[in-house]
Length: 458
Image 1: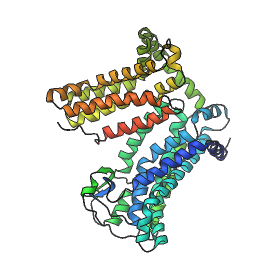
Image 2 (image 1 turned 120 degrees about the vertical axis):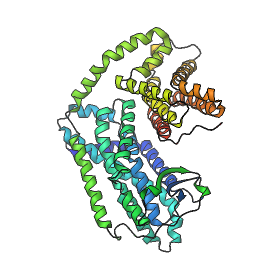
Image 3 (image 1 turned 180 degrees about the vertical axis):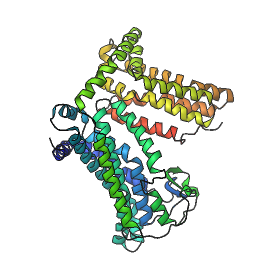
Image 4 (image 1 turned 90 degrees about the vertical axis):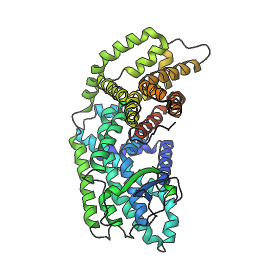
């Protein structure tokens, strides 16, 4: 099987899932609409010294392309998981005579196409917000070209990064939804820290900001979802044209093409050996530990089954979990303790998608005697057990807040501990609830470890 053949088959398979395609389109359109908020909205996605920027076609294009690069890895893997579920394809990969590089290349082509598809949908959603600005500019077509060139000139790098991650991570971890989502999140954060906002400027933010505000420090800008923007006056950026018509624009686009090619080469280099032996090896390695945990948890009824489902994690994850809880204990009461708690809960959340999946398929109910009252007592025990275990992770922070008399902080923490298990149990009733919950858990994890989740005062 050649790479192009595989990519074409995956595209045809995706088109056989109209609901998944429609959901992906709606999600991307909504993301584009959110990326460009109203000037009077409570948040902004690009600020200069704390002030939101007044929209121009170039500012809107830079914001749209830059935000897509920032979230492209996460969106790309989720879209590939929905449009072309890898579980069915893994059986094809295991028996096909194609080389691993051909499989990786076919996956990269599919992922790159999905990334461009997402970028197009996001651009369409942002265009709904941008239409009034384009009309006010007096040259609608010229403004549209400026908006388009900056959006795609920056965004194409995000599509390439997403394709590289999808072609490697999905191929290796497609049958492990929790590890798939966890690895995606870790890679996402690493790429953001090392490449996008670092000195390499792989996303092109430095070049774009230097055009909008010449001789200005990049530290004066902030990109993300920044709150309380409606209380600050807007700042006017310098009027610039399309990316292809400004000084250095053509060279910038050539560097974008080079980065896309480099991402493709990275996917081929990371393609590794054939897939089937890796699957057998990984299953054999974890069988002994999982068997021991299952034997121990079986002694405690349904509560033991739930604990066994969650704590059958690799030893490296348990080690990191212990480090996070210890760090939270040492810094209890300080803002950094929220970041440590976020890491602890994030590692714990890696098992929730598989717990949801086991419940969806009746796996938990087949291991215990079903209640005569129906499945709701089982759901209640699942939620209660998760809440208890989460409370143990948060115990150092609970003690610190209690000693300081911070009632609002305790209520904030208690609400999270109570709501998360309810979401887990509720989404387990939905088809595909494991994937949806993985997305929500990762978003929650990101908010906490990025410092956006702040304990209320008092």
